[in-house]
Length: 250
Image 1: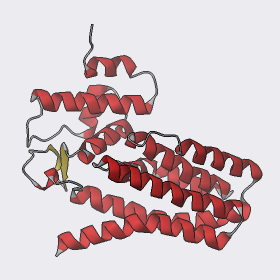
Image 2: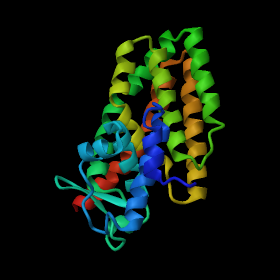
Image 3: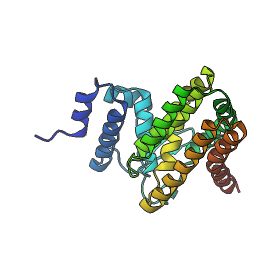
């Protein structure tokens, strides 16, 4: 017997595996859209309503909605809510980011750039051999993640940055990243989930090289190089977001 996504979701709700729950919520919402329960242009239920319906946390709902926004099936309207895309507006354009998501990702990156560049420098200065080994292990795992699995690529990316924070021996760096974890992962999924497979593969390779530069500088205890490598890694996306934002305001 084949179970629909909502039944699977209820059966899995007590598993505690956030990634599995997120994927199931994505499928359940997609099923509702395809069945017409959420028609083109219809407003999606609020986060608390979706949490209650599926029996999951806000974090799971936010990741699922972010993924569907990335796939251009949903669009956020600032101050109004999230709606099912009708396929005729700007949300149907390749690479489109709605204004609310764009602004939030830009603000998160601005904060990360300020925090993580110094975090990387402290990591190079203070890292222990044990923490360096852990960072290397995470980097190695990143290299074997399937390129087409944008959710797992994003999560591995976040774990790398969290490991750099741990290397700094300052628990507040890691605390800040964990607090921002949901917002960071949404932003990473936007970047990792490029529509064109070839473009995505090229992007993942470039990002991995940048992570390698950060790792190398930390291993060599080169504070200046670590700071520079982290800033270069984060700045490309930040500059792209600023450009998109200024273009829309013209």
